[in-house]
Image 1: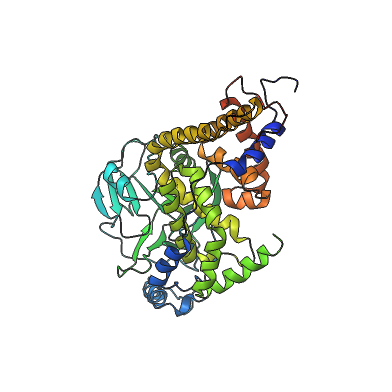
Image 2: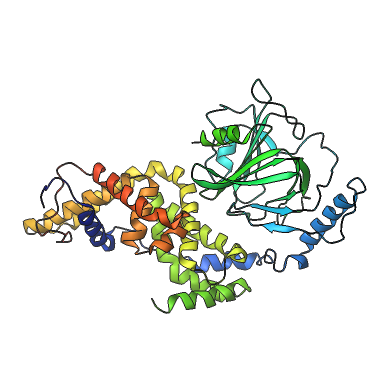
Length: 264
Length: 196
């Protein structure tokens, strides 16, 4: 070694390779039996897309969607959805391109879950809640605990620089949930007046959905709760390390990304 | 090794069709690796066990979106690492305790032995302790490559990053490890032979 005080990459790699087998791991527990018991207690759900039309919940969802489509201001909508599935690289979100944007009665209030505090929400969800430093502490926090991993909603009221969003009645809505645990949690129906743009958020793949409001359906698999349907405003959606984030606002893509980038 | 992808593919396909025995075989095959990866993240045995168990259960219910024919191992590890990260906050306070236990264990293992063995033992302890002080991303990338021998393609899946960035991540992790090591650390006298 030229300099005994500095280890080269190769030396470090060699050292780690040799240390690896001696790493002091605790004994490996036997997980197979426990896992078997747990998965036997809950049958495997039907496969997404491939067998989806045999799933009664999905059929019910389709029926609801069809009603919405038929009621869409007398527009001639085909009996079958001319939908193109856009498989996002964002877990927990499915986007369908639909031939025309359905209209739904604007919700007078949106169900974001149970009002709570950040601390209480943090103790209930299985991920670290991220608050954007650009916006500061949220004006309200809501928790949905009945889904795998939980979901938190951070609400910011409209204020100078943050316009009011007609669809939500607030300024900025940020939702966070474990997309890796609930891959079909949110379905978005996107009409021709809505643009889908692939983007990057802190190096992670994301999507910017903008233009005409799009239909958003929140579905809790295996739950008796009905799906929630409402129209959503401009939305930035991305996933980081299993957690899926949505920022919904009337802000520009650049500003939404600035907010996203200020998440810890 | 050669038979693994085929075996995994067949087991995964059966498990996707509801064959619990096939999935149990996958759990048995990967439980040690999953537990150790989780332990690399949490530094706590109980949290690592919870994370690995939860990951296997969640992976089972996510099999429907697993791409048939792609390697199961890195896909599973990605879920394991995510689960482990989500437990890490609670485990954080216990890491110091684990490190102290590690130091005690290492010194206890040090045989009253020639100088070279003691030197190797000290080097190993320093290296492992320093590794545990690195950020999780760095620890994982080093462990995947150098402890668990994942290929670059597998690492890209396990780390959920583009394949082209794996090498640079590894390089940056090594650089940060080097900076974190004590200035006066030396390889044991037999260069590269760190196990005495």
